[in-house]
Image 1 (cartoon, helix red, strand yellow):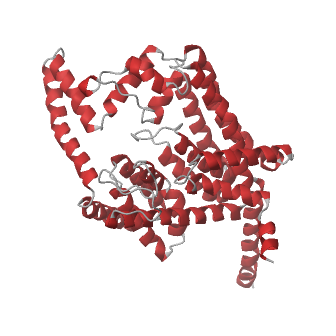
Image 2: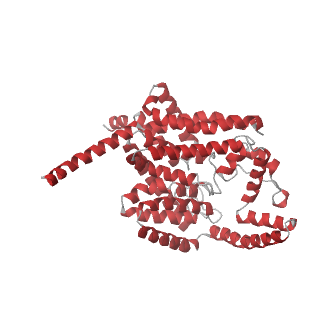
Length: 447
């Protein structure tokens, strides 16, 4: 009997839906993003071979358009690429991403599928938050991966950056419906999430969290927003005492901030003062945790090759050619620019930046043209995309492997909510039921 139920549950749509959840849930485990991404791509290929692509034709076409906004600038960057092999590899991987997107779209064809995914994310992130808080209090880890490092907590992840980034940027998607439905447990969940993100010790995570809370505040009244801001500030002040890494970085900001002001004053008096210029650069670098070197190198890449850039996925090999010397005379070899817009412009030039802005504009236009019911379903995905694409974040880039995998899942959820036929049917059915339920009341009123 159990085997029969299992076989009944293991349908292609259900498996696709599960892999959409695994794009987040599997991140801490061996294989990380690769397992759900490759698995989703294989399922997407099976969907295409079975001739079921028309089932998701409308959202799939929009996904293809958005992916072309990445591929076309990438192809145009090949002639000027400093690492053509890496550029071709990134372009070829778009086929894998496209097939994975087909899988996610196929698994999220109905309104119920979106509800299942969002409930699954609530459970996954709750488990991560519990692990993070346990780690903060005991120094141990429930999953046995790693203890806390450098005064941070990193939950079930081996690195101390990914945990806080994922939890913070998925805040709108995870908490949108629970807060909208006024579930009591949602406030406790939100409190645990805020404390966890603060304890990760990264300022970028606080920015992502603040952006997520800002989008969630659209669900509240003005009075509730004021209470929420006060509660957030109180949590920040209290938890700050237990976040040594965050204290250290705030200290850097305080120290370097004074030096920045002094150096600017000296440069205003004497623009040719090279010593003041160097002190300003060093202060900015301390203020941003070595990001000034990346910004400086990225801007030089843009200046050198403004139209098509140094090549898609070529920021890392190009960096030593443009970077200033790091302290102690060593050159840094970062994997990315720590900012989506800087990296895309450096790698694919103004063409790539324009394509990204066009893609964002299309996504916004599609939302505005959708019905109110579809907008309501797409809103938590749209809010999460807003957080992920915010231009002032200083740690992530769009094409980072773990980040882009999650971005793909959120983007496909957004497109499915706006264009999937099954979602429209569920919305119309709900609307008709509401109308039928209202008819007796109207009849009574007329009588």
